[in-house]
Amino acid sequence: MRHLAIVLAAFLVTAPAAAQPAPAPAPRLSLEHRMMLRCSAAFALVAYRQDNGDAEALQYPPLKERGSEYFVRASARVMDEAGLDRDGVSTALRTEAQDLLKDRTLSAVMPVCLTALEQAGL
Image (cartoon, rainbow, N blue to C red; front, top):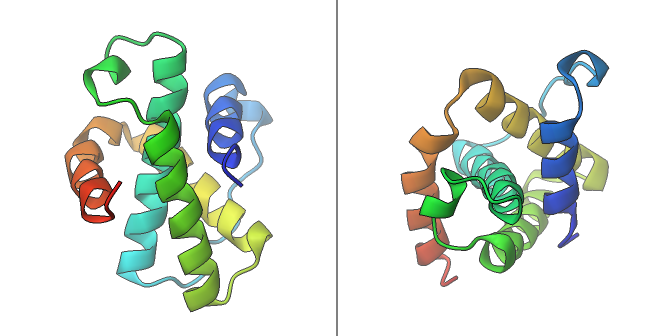
């Protein structure tokens, strides 16, 4: 699942909007679960952009390893607590990533997500 973050980011950044399937309805998740998934998606998107030399993404600390570890832990926790399988978590992550891109809110959520990363001990 570690590389799922990079694959998710690559798919979302490189696939044309018309080629992306319509997001499935997100499962009912707690606010904390949604925040963890949103931050996981944000870290995946930023790590992907950092790997590609994006100047805006490079302003953040390197997220490939730390962000991937957060992604794995958050996904496992949401699966355990919300009773989702991998497909359910993948769908929720895709929805969060698409919302970040569509609403152009990636940079707005990064300060909160970086704090969550630190609080997770990563």
